[in-house]
Length: 275
Image 1 (cartoon, one colour):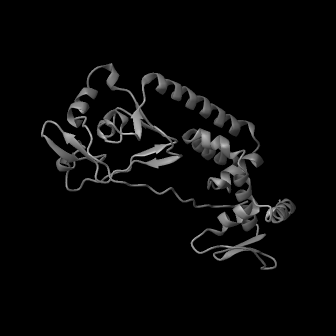
Image 2 (cartoon, rainbow, N blue to C red):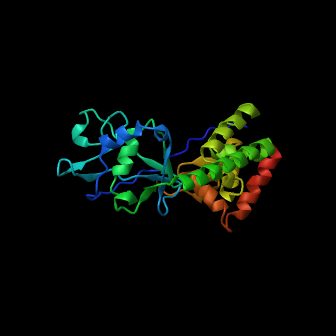
């Protein structure tokens, strides 16, 4: 079987922030260099929600600078030593600050990002309601839970047969036209990067259904066109695709409906015949 899949990424969100109390960036960076406690990872957590992927709003973020008695704009630019816009170079490039599964881990090697998050008005410590720095006890609990999840995810790759792993591999856009160990190696990377989501994929009907649809296109059972999905042999339309949508996505959702269930069963039968 051969399959190459391109998958899209999630869009970022933006909003305007208000003035809030400041954590002085330079003094904070200096404190990170003192004591054994400096070389640690800071974990920030979204208060409520956040989903799988959340980009922290960075438009017009301002803080009050007590030392200068003025309101100043801040932004996170990885290559800039300061978080203050008026102290950054003309070529400063802002970077997204992304929480995944409600968490963001920042190593001590990124003091400017720690300073930015600690100064951000949406931080609970500054009166915000969006995110907070996690305390050490909670951090330890999260780290242990993540380790267990990774162990469980890796265990699935070890225990399941390649036929059970292929639907997940196809769904993730992994090239299955390679040796089994190559497929498993790429699955390991996905499992370690997002173990909870990886584990859920094995019980997600959409994963198996999308995999079947994509394989049916590969084996010329289905004809994937921009305006819809057709039977390859008869050129008969199965389901139309609205403008701007992907035919595989539309077909997958259709197969998960009561109306599309007989079509999905027929696809599985034809796949089994050519396997």
